[in-house]
Image 1 (cartoon, rainbow over the protein chains, first blue to last red):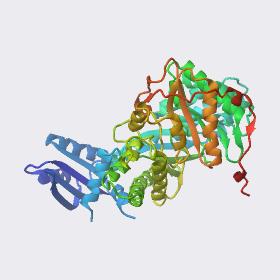
Image 2 (image 1 turned 60 degrees about the vertical axis):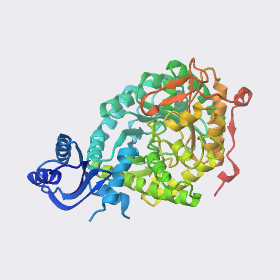
Image 3 (image 1 turned 180 degrees about the horizontal axis):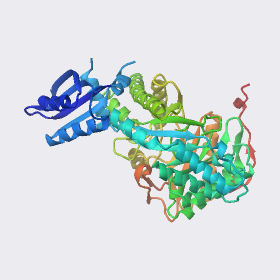
Length: 89
Length: 450
């Protein structure tokens, strides 16, 4: 299953490394990545494949959220389908 | 691969503009639960609902978490109870409402709809007993919603039922003390069988055994989109609303299909209604004001609402394989911060709301009036709304709360999604002689379409 990880927060050292390490550790493959700074906020979006993930989706979501909170970041993961549904015919 | 702007735009709609799925409603047929013994019938009803809806709430949460889209309510609608209860000899149908309430509580759904009767052409004995039981049933239960259909374009208006519902609303208000029971009671003309929204949801006799219907929301998203086109002509306004409605509805369709697949229950419809909540920024009145009106209810409001209602349907219809339910903008006064403010300022009146209901769904919704308003006046308000529905071939409804002990200027607070209603004045005069006539107002000429 493909999903979108969105990371938003104050820019700081090691955000990408931190999120990627967590994802790698539980078997989530990063397929694409894009980042920008919007109104002083670091914004990163990753397309990932959760097919080999060792955690159920709800736990994956929770662990990303908790990791984000530790660093003052908002991290969420959502199935890719919702974005396709809203923006593609 | 993916578009950063689109992803951030979607999440902004969810986080800041209150985009959500308003309800996933499971419709359940109770036609096989009729029994001559009331306690057996009630047990069969409880057993069937708890069997079929066992995974409704957990599936809703799963979808919510995986897609990151809030699903505000998970609800159940059932076959109009008058059709089931007519088989038993009991005079009081409150035990049926209690069975529904227990099942709803057990399943974790906040409302269950279908303590209903369809009496547009006349009453069966069961219909009459059900209507007589409504005040008691709504006061004895927490989550049960009731509706009565008193008119259709095909049958005309059952004025005996209109008269009876005025009295029923008055006694429900008085029995519940604060009028809260009336927030769970809707009087319809041209009621639809697949409405997922409360309090008017029921599972029609033409519906399958079990079905999933979804209602979307998103007034905040539409208002936000209009903010970026200030001063542009209405052609641009209509296009902008259509595009926004398309996106909102596609999300509803996705959630509906996903819920249907996971629950192994057929997908029924997506309801395209724009449903507000009392939260600031989630208001249909805001959209009207964004179009250039200083306050919802002033001159121009009906035209603005007509455009909004039409554009939402045009945008939404291509986004869903089956559109149904009420599908139109809702204008419940107590559930919309902008409507509350407009009513309190005196700009939005009952008469203007009645005009607005000619061009949108669903009707005079969540309106508090003084507690001393007579049953006949309430019946006459219902008759006016029913006439609008019957002649315009559309659904209209009345959910009105004659708040005991309250007068114009007071407020009635229902809490939660039901919000807070300012007590509004009714038009002076007396309609008692009109309501006392009874009988039926014949169906309009254009009902003869064969």
